[in-house]
Image 1 (cartoon, rainbow, N blue to C red):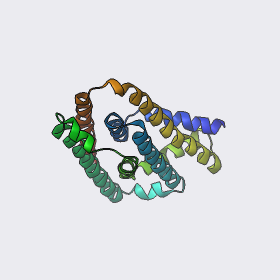
Image 2 (image 1 turned 90 degrees about the vertical axis):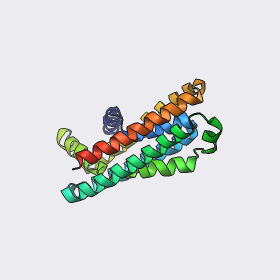
Image 3 (image 1 turned 120 degrees about the vertical axis):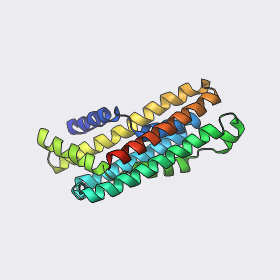
Length: 204
């Protein structure tokens, strides 16, 4: 139980470093409803667990090779920029036309699919988890079984943090005018593009 709790606390701490996935789900929440964002959160959690499992079986060592890191780094940057442009386009084009905005609706299926693709576009996350597990193995003297329990806790923290955050946002957004929603969409789009460009620069 202590190992699981330690994993959850570690994961929650890591969640404080808000990344592109958080802002993407933020955009889904302000633009639609909690059901759609929850579907996206389930996709993110699923991908996190897939990467956690892969890191535990040692795939992270393979991805540490410079050539592989560069290929995946470029691919994830392109996907981030494309997703950012898509959201930015929607915000800019339909900012004064709420009826058309509603016509381009989020659904649980496209929310899940897009979040799965966005989260899965960065396999180098496996390298990050490999580093975390290696550090914990040394710090806490965790064995393989304990690392698995720790991994379950860190993955669970993703779901808890995002679902709780988006639930609060969905409760507050009922009073947000559509114009503000589209401005927020533009901001989210810019943020995703920024992350994509930054990753591209750092990948050189």
